[in-house]
Image (cartoon, rainbow over all chains, first blue to last red):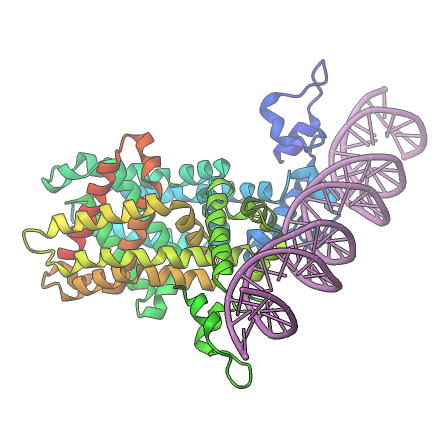
Length: 227
Length: 227
DNA sequence: TGTACATCAGTGAACGCGCGTTCACTGATGTAC
DNA sequence: TGTACATCAGTGAACGCGCGTTCACTGATGTAC
C-alpha cells in the first residue's frame, strides 16, 4: 500500500485540513493523490528522465513530457510546478544511492585493505554516475548555476563522501596532513572524483581507459588522505 | 591602427573578393568592419560581460545587451550570430591569459623552489578566476552541456596546465607514479583546481579561508606530481 | 577645396514562433448505507 | 447488492507573453579627382 493510498483512506480532520506531515501527498491544486495519481506521477518522472537524457535540461519541455506520457500538459501541472521541479524530484531519488559508498570509509585506509577500499569507493561512484549520468549532470549544472534547491540535493548526496574524507584527513597522524585543511581537501577530492566520473569516457579518446581513470583517481585520493 | 582600419584602406581585389585571411573583419552581413564598427563591437562585448555577471547565460537577452549598449538589436546582429556567440568571443579573449601560468611548470618541482612554484601556479589560477568568474563559469557550463565550441576554447585555455602536469608525471622517477596514467592524473588535478578556483569563496562558509584552499590544492597537486 | 560617390554603420518597428500555463469541464473510482 | 455522493484524475483548447530576428530604410564617414 502506497502512502497515497493510506492517506486516501484516512478520514479528514475536523476542519478539513490534513496532517501536515502528509502534505507531499497533495497534488498542487490541493487534491489528495491516490493510487492512480501516484502511478501517473511516476510515469511522468520516468518520461522526464528519458527525455532529459536525449535533449538536456535546456530543451526539456512540459509539452513533450506530457505527450510522451500520453497525457495533457494540464496533468503535468497537477504534480509538478514546472519541468525543473520534476528534475529535482529525480535528483532527490538518485541522491539516496550514495549512502552505501560511505561504508568504504569506515575501513582503515592506512591498513592493508586501505588502497583497495579507496578503489572500490571510486569504482562504485563511477558506476553510480554511469547509471544516472543525465540526472546527475543536470543536477550539477543547475547547482553550479546557483539554484539553491539543486545545491542542497547535491550536497546532501555527496555528504557521506565529503565527511568521510574530511574525517580521515583530520584524524591522520602523518606530518604532511598538518598543512591540509580537512574540509577544503575533502571538497577538492570530491570535486575531482565527480569530474572524473562525469568525463571518464571522454578521456578514453586520449588513451586513458576507464580502469586507468579509476586507478589514478583512487590513488590520488588514497595518498592524499593517508599522507 | 586596428586590423579593421587596415582592411578598410586596402584596395579591393580584382573580383571584389577580400583576402580570406581577413574574413573575421567582415560583419555578418558581409560588410567590412571599420574603426567605428569595431568600437561598437567591443562595447557590445563589454556590456555582454556585465549583464552575464548579473543574470547568467540563461537570462542573457540580445534586447537587453542592445539596450545597455544604447543601440538597436539589429546592430547586435551585425557582429554576432546570437548571444552565445558573443559569450564565446569573450571566452576566447579570457582564455589567452592562462599562458603565463604555464611558466611555473618549467621549474623543477622536485627542487627547493618546487612547492612554492606549485603554490604560485594555484594562486595565479585562482586570481585569474576571481577576475573573470562570470565568463569562465559560463564557458564551463556550456562546455559541460556539450557545446563543442566552448569545449574547444576551454581545452585550449587549460592546455598549458594539463600538458605541463602530464609531462611532469610522465617524467617522474618515483615508484608511486608508475601507477598513475599521466594524462588522466593531469585531467583530474586540473578538474580539482578549476572547481576550487570556482568555489573557494563558498568554502569560507565552512571555515576554510582562501589561503587554506590555495595551500591545500597546491599541496595535493605538488605531491601527486612529484611522488 | 569642393563635390560626387562608395561604403560603412546603425535603426524602428513589427512579425511570428514557441512554449508555459490555465480554465472550465468530463470521466473514473471509491465509500457509505 | 444497489445507488447516491464525494472525491480523485485527467483533459482540450486556447490565451498570451516574451523574445529572436529581420526588413527596408536613414545617416555617417571616407576617398577620388
